[in-house]
Image (cartoon, rainbow, N blue to C red; front, side, top):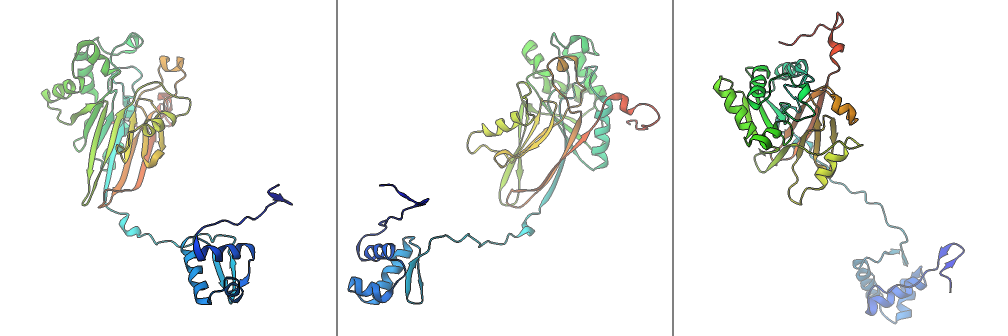
Length: 345
């Protein structure tokens, strides 16, 4: 027999509970809008017992409604309308602000020293004390980039150029990661911790503002009064995807349970992008290198610029007012001539 009758599902009785309450439910389904007196006569029972059965049915989720003396079934569920007010006074705390850049590629003729110095001017003006660099500070050596280098071959030569040309501001400390490519090529070829080598070489000539924080990945704990959280900074790997957000999004989606940081800051792809997969703030921070011939061949765009990251950390280690600000720059010709007066310090 068809379950459909003129487009409607034919009603069937459903047994929710056994015993006397079940019998009450059965009658209500078959004969809606029965009165309490009719149910009492039908079941040969007192009205108080009928009412007790109705309460038991309600406890089991049966939508019994009693209007005056009539008993029926409610056929729709009310939309939940109750809500708890949120105390936004708790959305405040310690204000944290960093400069974050990546992929500067010093020693390459495509490195934008003008942009790098401009970014440090911006950070200094904004009162920023720490600038994080997410890898590829120097260009390294590989067959496809040797004709683009401004220095003589070798790690020593590139390190000297880096220290001499990296911006120095009295109020700013630079903290840098190394990647497994570019400067990482020296790790593979000569077996040296490039980041430690650069920091030690800088100290020898009195530059204590350059600090090495790790290879490929660095986790920074943010301690609050009651709880703590952490920010992960990475120099990623692999090629660029068709969608700018895809690689960083898949990175967060791949993280093992219990390992999610509050923020992931990403270098390597020469892109700026902000996303929020799995409730994680993910920022690709741009690059300080123009598009190279190799990048054009691979059809890889570059977003030249750097990023300011700011947020508030409340007493429970929760981030609020998270704000990535990208500082975009354009090709060198844009800043030449009489229409543009900027010159770095």
